[in-house]
Length: 297
Ligand code: G1P
Image 1 (spheres, rainbow, N blue to C red):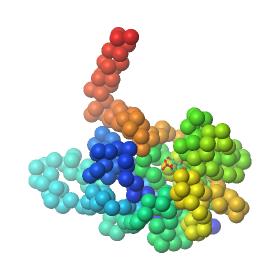
Image 2 (image 1 turned 90 degrees about the horizontal axis):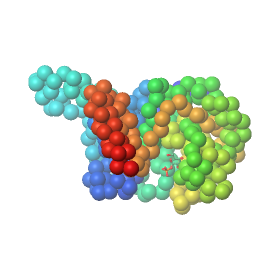
Image 3 (image 1 turned 90 degrees about the vertical axis):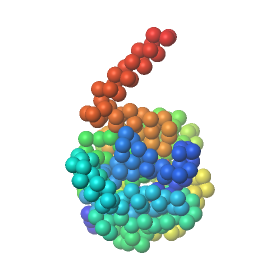
Image 4 (image 1 turned 120 degrees about the vertical axis):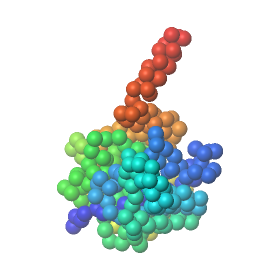
């Protein structure tokens, strides 16, 4: 039975050590691309896909995330009083309906699969989405919305997929493709972070998933996998073993790996250039430094 996907899990428990010292006191997900926190992009994408319930799997030190999604009546009043309606609209657009967000703590850092499993009681018996806010995807139609539309046809389980350089496969979940239908691929196996010479393809899993609640049962049973962690990839692969469908979906859009500094900077430039109020200044600056570089060569 295919059902509407209305719940999404956002695993945000990670310590963000790659962004130290900033992440000593700021959750990584609050770090901004231009002026919007990473997590806001994930929430906007989920909303566009029809998600109504937002489940955050957090950890100690993530209080700023909860504050961010709280309403800010004083700030709103101040902006209203000063007639700053544009800013007021921006602030209000981040408000979430009361009760739409739930926070669950992952008490031990046992991996992505474990983080998702922590939300099992809130998911109960429904298909659900998982969004990894580190993977930011710029697209005309938001990635999860593309997937929800494809999922309406396939049911089963679906992961976002993208071709990566063969030497990078060891950083990803990698798909073993049974049937390549273009945007959609039917999957016959999945491996988490395989050594490069063992990767079944160079089609990598990107952080968007639509999963059947059966995956949560699989998570009850699986043992720790790559890196000693409970892997979501393994719980999805277990679906295939039970003859349930797993599909990869080649989304249309550009993915930025905001879990890495270089990816984060690239996303900052791309999102800056996409903004009307910044485009001219920023592109002039970029042209100038490229010219300077070329002149120096
Ligand atoms: C996670 C998943 C991996 C996936 C990746 C996408 O890994 O475990 O399967 O390919 O996200 O970004 P992480 O990057 O958290 O190590």
